[in-house]
Length: 76
Image 1 (cartoon, one colour):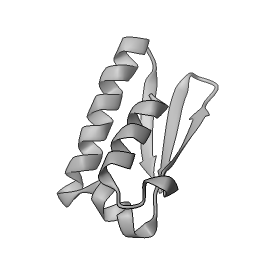
Image 2 (image 1 turned 180 degrees about the vertical axis):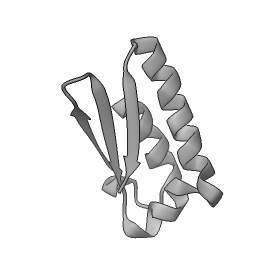
Image 3 (image 1 turned 90 degrees about the vertical axis):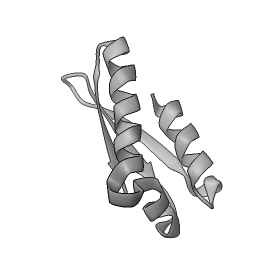
Image 4 (image 1 turned 30 degrees about the vertical axis):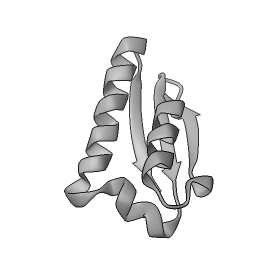
């Protein structure tokens, strides 16, 4: 799932070398993905009214259901 977020983010931003995805796994199986981008690219990743971020989260939910896990995407 980390790869999905990284691939999408690098395709959107102006500085793909600054994209970093950190994966944290909680004790209860919850996966938290932290997406870090350059400050100038944060608006591109979030999108107008958060539509790009919502789309990325929807794709993650589909992948999580397939793997029977739960995923949260946080954009820093």
